[in-house]
Image (cartoon, rainbow, N blue to C red; front, side, top):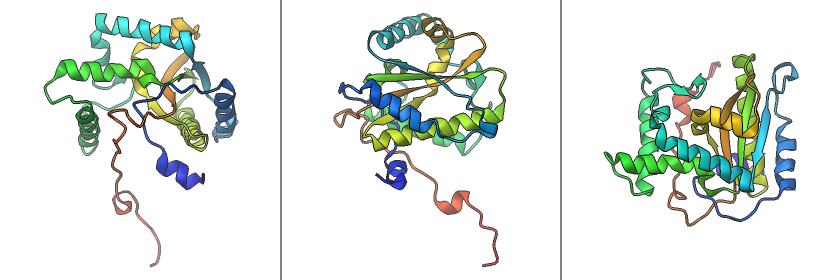
Length: 229
């Protein structure tokens, strides 16, 4: 698979088969992805890889707490310990966010106004969408925006290398809402912050969300060429 093929075939998969992924394969993917660039070689990433009973128990804890404390997921900007969005979210970002959300719900048979349906659909995040491998990423709280930029390149590298290995993925900010549960479950020190989670495995072609493909801007919408032509 070429780099271009990996980039074009990467997507956020929200339905995985139960086909196992070996620890050796995950280790290879992470070893390669760790060649991602970082400012002055800080390498700010730390990864917790979850499989089997450890992964399932985290899902159980979060889903149980979710029903007791639903307000955790209703803040308009905050994901756990950091702000992901500005408030209010301006256009065109608000429309893009709404479109991908409703496109997803359409495949799940959830209609506008069905709050119970959207709640159940978003809850699939916390089962890692059925993937055999879950990941939780953390960062040192003392680091600043530059290291977060570095972290994005690392996570992207994981997803692209995974494609070469025939795997799919979904990066998940939703896990940050339950950073305290994650911290206790995985013995993460309080000096580190949960950045996001990720589901990793083989896509299930029969999953109702499998046909979902998100739109991208045309080149002229985001590029300005400064030249003499």
